[in-house]
Length: 275
Length: 262
Image 1 (tube, rainbow over the protein chains, first blue to last red):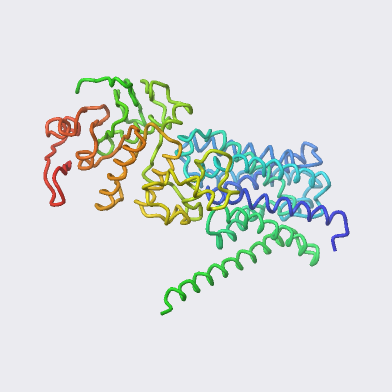
Image 2 (cartoon, rainbow over the protein chains, first blue to last red):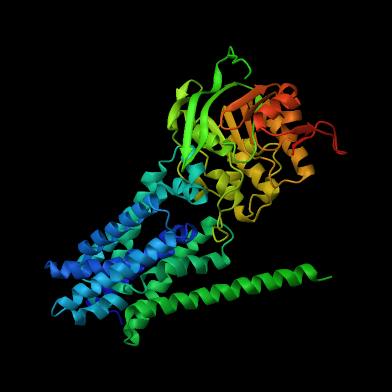
């Protein structure tokens, strides 16, 4: 079924970005940054609009730039004001979506494109995107492997990380940078609205059955691959939008692991209460 | 204020005129602190006395507005912090973060993320020295977020000992620990102090604990208002000076020497 080149590209990209999102997502969820990544992905809409307006044919660069701009604004507002993080993120999320929509409505000939960026489109994955996904996956995987101790300690406690000599601020910025790039790349497949799901659902599915962090990381990477690859296959087979197919496949995985963990708990109880 | 005495072996902590203002409140108003090496000492003070702020300054987490702090004669930075172990009161852990005790401890082992690639047996072998006497073998596989207060404290002490510190700072070490737990905590700290020959600073609002376990006590209330042996500091006059309120030493049925601030 994967004879067409565009289909092969979509599948390879999904098999790269799914595991990557699963890996990063373990730390995104543990650090309660899911809403943060949602804000960055919605800022990408403004990036796409501005990029189109400025004449960019490929919106990746403006998406990343706008995502980083909004992330920087978020960190700045958090430091300089007494506003709650949730409030700041809601403000920036709705603000950048509204800005993006206004710019798009002023442009002619873009509105038809909007749909594919909102919900993802396998047709939009060109050869360039595959290489980009490959390069980013490789760099991030190596970076996480090298800095796994620091990233894990940072997630457990920023104070402890600082005292242990970890450059907390620099690592936090690097993490936001990686997150922004991964989100911008994944928008091709998943769309702006659903991109956060690939950062959240595979780690959650893994969390259901993992007994420690190592297991959660390995299982989240696997769940990301299954969700991404399975979703693209479903999308192709049944002519469904790509993003929702990936999300539903991931949700199915989540439900399966949830059921497995419940069964395990129930059988554990039964064993203990047996005479 | 008691006379400042310089320890012949050099000072573990030395601060001069440390001032910190948070919002509209001047939390630290010129803290001069001199902690000799190799002792178990206590930094006490009521809530709001600036203990936590001073501790954050010592750890480089808070920059003083004025004044100077040195640890082992060096300015606070990554280099000297390598010689410091920090045991926080608790960790801001999310239950969804399933880091196990074994994994948490292994984060401090030298090398790059060996815990991820090594077998449990190999990791445990590397941890063995640090775990001695801490009674953690049974909970290595448990998630860190599911531990009791006492268990988490032992894990945090073990973790800080892995980097072989010369100074151990413990924040409210007996808060949330019951009486028997408190007793075993002090036995543990005494043992750690003896075995690792380090300086231990207990930061606490609980006066009863310092009486029996610290060899020197520093009372903080924006400034170090008195310091000395526990007997000196515990005398009602100097404590009154420290806390600015009336204090009566009284005896509990569970043993002598428990003093409370009213």
